[in-house]
Length: 336
Image 1 (cartoon, helix red, strand yellow):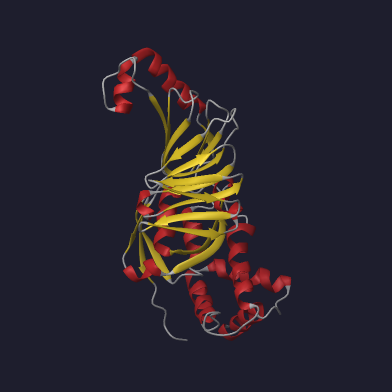
Image 2 (cartoon, one colour):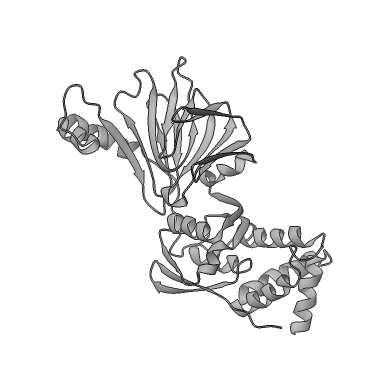
């Protein structure tokens, strides 16, 4: 039986497997962890980093994507990322609180007792496991990723439009009679006039990234300003800027429920999964953290379905330590 399966896997990577044979291979992979482990062992012997094999990389990526996107996984399991919800009710409630309590809301948000000269800041926060969309007073739209916070002042429409961000957000900024729009992050400020861009500023990622889809923005840190053009990503890491050409649209696919990664570390992948699915994962073997991952998947699948499929690309096994807790360990595979 193993020889037959092994030949089917090799045929797939060489482009010789029929559509019916491919469907059978996918079904076999879903049957058990042992099957997936065996598949991984065969794949490792055909690693594109170690040998020239023209169809291996594209075939393997295609199979992973069919498992994660093309296949309609069952619904109804726990640990699913919740659908995008609009935050207008939350903002309306905050505005009502401001009207009723007066200076007390200013005290909570600014840290000082309210005075007539004091500016009130309104804040929208998104918990782990959710995404949210916010409409700013000027008509600009903001999509917030999981565990992100955006805030803006009560005098937002007076002069410079100022927004603070912690986490990740996609912006579609409305043009407002030449009024500047500034997004403040912990590393730098983004100066905008009307454009579409994505900002990733999670503190625990130890970097800040801004990707421009269209328009023009300027990144300002202290006295330094760097212009970013469409199709570029500016990364600030370890007190240095790095400007890269990129497929800008990929940076914002998360707002549509699609996650597209290019060589991110397993450590970062786990942190993202923790946010999207509101779970905690304990990585037992530090060596796993430095392994890289590239791939695409939808966040419609449950966390168990995602982890099971990721095992085809990264040698790990996982167990549950509770309803939302997972233990991740290196899977040391035996030799064939």
